[in-house]
Image (tube, rainbow, N blue to C red; front, side):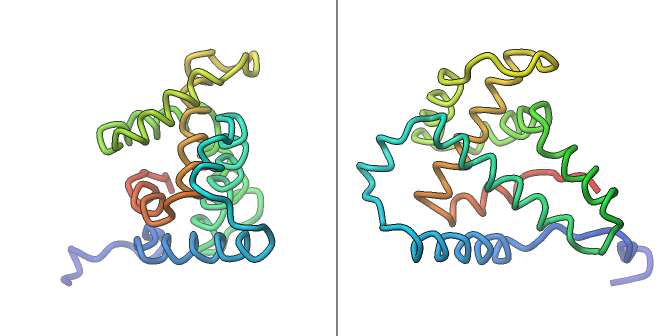
Length: 160
């Protein structure tokens, strides 16, 4: 790589897909050791709001881990994470991922959108529905297909 092609060392590189998959597998292994394995039929019966609740936590943890390197002051770290987990940003992520989603994933997104209730006053209800759909998709994929979750997370453009 020439000096012209080199990226500045202060810019963080997005984790490799294998890093995301490994992260997801470690999380799933810890869940599997603490809780009994649920069948596909049991996952199907989980409500979209339950999946969104889980997806919100999984996505925030992913974003927190994404911004760990290079080290930053905690207030900078917090600001970067909050900017990514806001409903508005999640809605944008869902729009960006939409062309890459499979039919079953689109059905999960639809279920999440329809389950979204009135959100915070600061957020437009349509944005809130999209953000809930995004979180529902993340929760569903975390429980059913970590490899696919890692693949989709790699497509997100997390800002530095």
